[in-house]
Image (cartoon, rainbow, N blue to C red; front, side, top):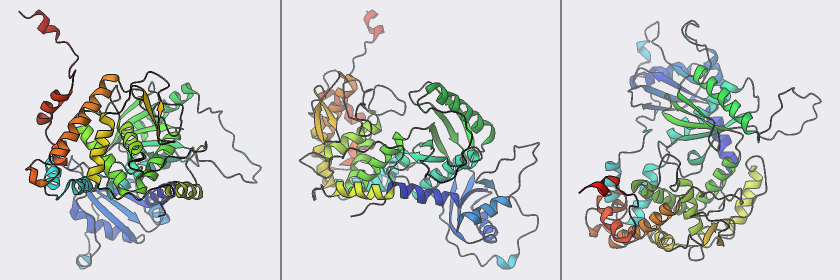
Length: 496
């Protein structure tokens, strides 16, 4: 089994974005006319049509090569400079032709356009109905992944959004790359999830040139400098980059970011600088998720369950994050009872992701330590809940590098060693109360799955029971939780 290198995946998607354009049209009826127009410049590879919640129609057009896409851009026009800043980007709109289209060409259109691709997550009711029709919990888990993962259009739009950054800043930074990381590329992304971007400067090959660019001094460890750069980047995006709206510069966060909404690709985005460890982590998660389809199925299922019962939250806080939940799943799959995943070998320190050769070598070493485990996914899920329902978080931490528990070095309620920076605890934010609640909910999940593993159990069975209304779970939670609510209702103290 050979896994495609992570760097190659990013490179292929970037190349795809470089020969693509996103064009606003009047309606889906404009697709034929747009195809005919773009074909005048060269061969059209693919076209994706979609509609946003504001009833705006867009077509993602991929040309045969980057020069053809550039040729189309060079022939595009700007609005009056007194009305709009003349910025060049891969985002355009298709205006009504001055001359009417020749009628004799109207019957020649046979290009297959991908229409009605959903950008948002599937409605929960529709998803649950499809899961209910499955024949087993294992099939439900497989369906959940297929119906909720980032689709092809979503992936293409993410890399095109990154391409806008490279085009907009390319005049200043010749070798800069805007790299998606996290759920968008690690294989665990849900359709409609946020886009995380990082601007990096990959290591350059040493050349024999004696000429070196003059430049301002820079230190990626200088927090004030990074905050200033974030402020500047936010201003450029807000003032000059089309589609970027609701731009917020969050400079006081642990990792300063610019948060914005891209109204053309319908994505909520966060962008940071110099933070290459996030790319390395994405690479590791991508590798582990590629080793066995059950890895991605389990992570997506656990995340969906945690979201449904409120264990996770879009805002950072004392609750467990999707990232920490994913590591819980990966660590469990390393245990002797599973051995679906091998322990991670320590990665050498590097400034960027592995080369293709390094990746293939590293992945081959990990794969040779795998055990052929044919266990059903539904059985693994129940064992996962059972494992952590009784896990001693008070004394032990989790280390994916060794695949074994370690004695906690501090008093954090939950301790998970960061595989990239082992001195850090990725779950340091999780409170003792949330850790206890996590274990209580896992006991509840175990009980519900064991009680309804087949469709014979009734209409609301298996995974549907875990992901449906929380009303029935409230009763179960009260059964197991010793301290469901620790907050005092002050008003009740004064009621007679």
